[in-house]
Image (cartoon, rainbow, N blue to C red; front, side, top):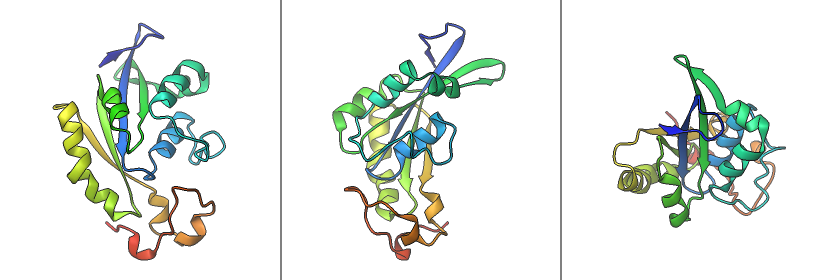
Length: 171
């Protein structure tokens, strides 16, 4: 576990979040960082995304994010530091993997290719850089599994695609 520079009495846990582009990594991180189910107003993905900088800047400059990162586990103050990565920036991910305490691999519930990429690409890459670091697999966009998919996707961005019912991954 990493040491925190903000408070010597707390332990910082570095959690690196990886996965294909447009699987929901940034939304997952923002919902945790702001303690909100849908942090659309604070986590604007219509602007350009800068990998790993979100975590560094937000934890240093945003008191709410820093406060939400703290909790007590077995009597120890823990600060969860979430590192967002960009799916196709290999050099930035190598930097993010450094001293990671845990890696979260995300896939989209409405993109079977992103699930297949977990074993074909993401797990081998994580193990290349972090041989014994714990890995969690997280399904994102689960709200789309049973919803009427076309109604859920209201804003079409450059990374959006039309989702068909046949795209949805069921348990």
